Image 1 (cartoon, rainbow, N blue to C red):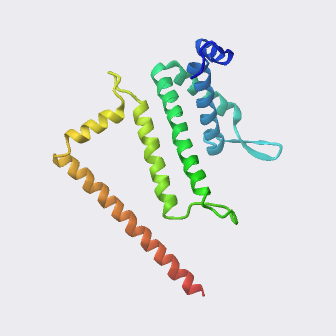
Image 2: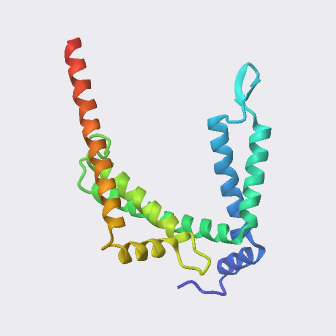
Image 3: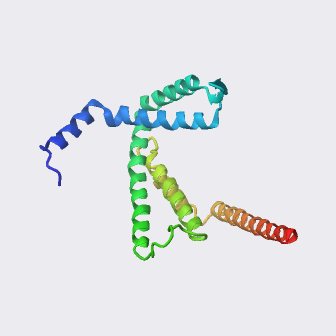
Length: 196
């Protein structure tokens, strides 16, 4: 347990009172993410700088700046961002801990990496974890997380035709994706055999 009178704890409390965690850090996070996406996608066009095509940094930075300010102005959005980022860190630590434990049994002769199907399984598990984290971070007007709201709706409507239709639709989409994926793989193999 950290002593509340220690200099570090006092410093963290001081930064909290200044609004660093509720204003400054969420602002920097949103600004960085939006600016990076705009720089990569070049939505606002490009300009030539020293003979190279570059994204328009002035428009990108202004849009990212305004977006970050709008997010920071909403206390509910800031609370959702802070909670989601904190829980994402736990998910990240879970993934790193798994890799550390698996690394104990690895010989070290070559780089360790997850192969299919394990990589796909863990990617889907991480995606489900991220979705659950954000659904828990976003609250309804009465303060109930959307995750609890959605889970309660599923439990209350599990006997109805709506849930059966949703499950059937998900199953059909999954099967269509699986069948078309296997067909693409087999056609790709046959094409490579034709070249030989």
